[in-house]
Image 1 (tube, rainbow, N blue to C red):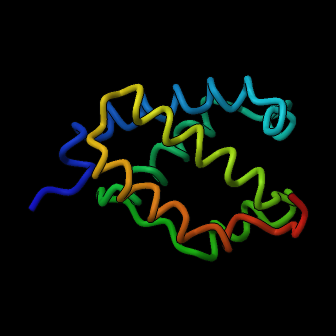
Image 2: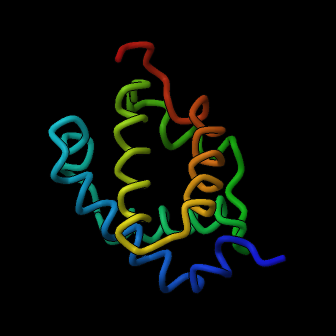
Length: 121
């Protein structure tokens, strides 16, 4: 059985989704502040690998890495949910099947405790 990564067309299409996701993030008043002094090309590259992994692609980013890179950011549950909503929207914009979106969103949600480190909303 093919993974979501394979069904969506691999890295090239994942990168398009991630690029569109970050366009949405940068328009989000709730999230844009996290990215003021960030090398977006580098971030899109890293995020493409992360999203490819949760889609079942040939990438392995361990939990410690996710915890380390997000540990000092103070990301709240509400901000995580905003990012999740924007990722879902980006996949919908790229005509992902609803079952594939649900699978990716479940995998994304399972990593919340590695990313959220602020009990605020």
